[in-house]
Length: 72
Ligand code: SF4
Image 1 (cartoon, protein in one colour):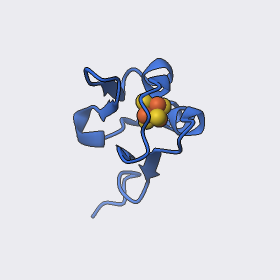
Image 2 (tube, helix red, strand yellow):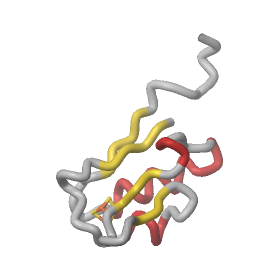
Image 3 (cartoon, helix red, strand yellow):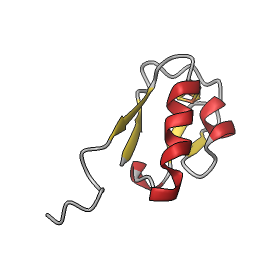
């Protein structure tokens, strides 16, 4: 699973960092940055979903087309 932040929407509430510190950091202005190029480790998938649900601006998107061991 990959996660991305739409910086056009992000208003810098830092909620994502609060619920998913493994996946996000924030810049000096409080806008979200994804860690690890947005790559979400399996054990952090729930954190990613939580962050998405908790973002007041719907700025967080999950892309689950990859990972899940498709073998390709
Ligand atoms: S919770 Fe949403 S709006 Fe707030 S910093 Fe994270 S991505 Fe940006």
